[in-house]
Image (tube, rainbow, N blue to C red):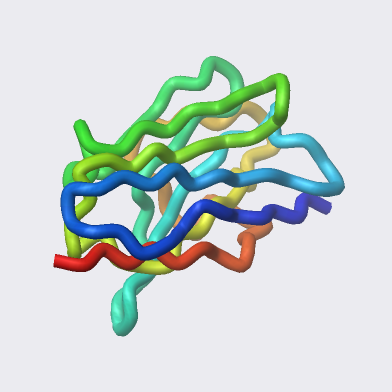
Length: 129
């Protein structure tokens, strides 16, 4: 059973940066694709970015492309989401999750929450204007 913990959220001014971390206990992340999702008040959870399980290829939702970078440090078994040029519209609770696939999972599109599991408690990101 994978248990995920997100960290790194906070309050930042528009244009600022934050780096979110996703770390697992119980089972390592190495064999999983990792998705980052966010949920703002009154809105559905949406996929932001994804890193594939085997070759670490990545995918970004259009609104964050060029501003966010997902990466995996296999030595520490941690996945990061570097967020630059933050905008008030980025304010949300950010979650990471692992894929449900029985085999390799390739991130070819925005991650769908239904394809992922083992959600962490989330980390709050607030961007002030």
